[in-house]
Image (tube, rainbow over all chains, first blue to last red; front, side):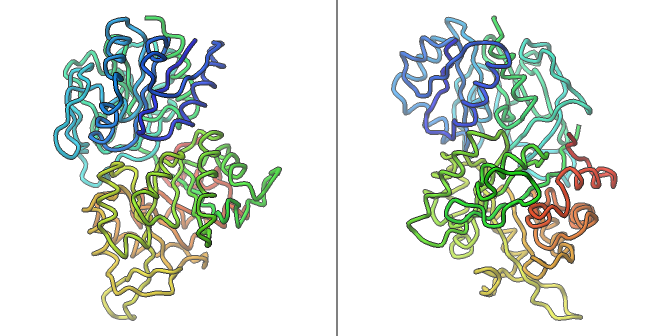
Length: 216
Length: 258
């Protein structure tokens, strides 16, 4: 299995690459990770992972700056239906529009907006920073065997904005932080996690293994 | 379904080596930051903090290699601070694998760096480290001032005013160290922690002075901290990370237990 881990200058990829290899081991899949943004490599990949650390606008501009990248992502994921995983801002980019520091257009694969967190309880601090458990909202193959709820596994969050999908069906899992925070969204063969699976230890590796096993 | 309080061990790194190594664990190389990071990861630390205290300019790059190797070997969130002067320094650390970068003196000199860094990397990645010391006398209204150079240089800047200002500029977290308490084991300066935590809407990490298990609890329940950072009590094995977390959970604080 060929995994394209997209490097477009929006953060570190070492952890994500290592976590994907460990997940492949766990899933019993022989895989190799290709780092970069070469459209030909991406077109041939069986799985595509788009990380993203930073501000929405900055990541969006970096993505647009790579010649042919958006086109090949669209073709490979939206037309050919290869499984795609967006992480953190890589997930937020799936929305129609982001509201962080001015309005910026996203890829529009998951109808919705990226809006500022606004926890109902005033004492809760933003960014939502640290370990939280998840609540399942919809069935999805990437959730297989993951324990949810109060006694479930923890995911590591680090964000001030989240993707609010227009369609309830696209919201796969949430975390509770003064209200529901989008944790996993999905539409077609594209999914995204607001938290960092590569920093979320057991839960992260299990989810990545499920993503590699997923055959939509 | 609650966000958990974080426990953050902090390692001082000089020229790519850990200065105060962990001496309670059987490590192959106590001076290797990556070995220490792995040990804390296994112990259940919620995040790790590297403070680069490299003095010479030529060796400044050594921390990048430490961060890179840690990111390759540990699936844990890492904050890196020390010697961050420009947005370019933040970028280099982020690309090496830091999840958050902490800015100290550079922000005291020119707060605008906080805004520039947050604009580029998002507020969630930018920590402002504040070293504060009480300057009010007994009987006077509480007042704390920002100090630099390990607490030796007063700046005349009010700590609360400064915290509010860097939060407005886009800092995502404040790492607050009481220079009066640092190294004393007398507990956090709870009044200071509470004053800063109440004044800003971003998370505050309490640091400086922890000596007992109850000190960790007080930092959260009385100080209002979202996370607690400590160095020597962990490195010298006074307490394990797990022991601290169990104690805090018993006190009713939501923790991520193994």
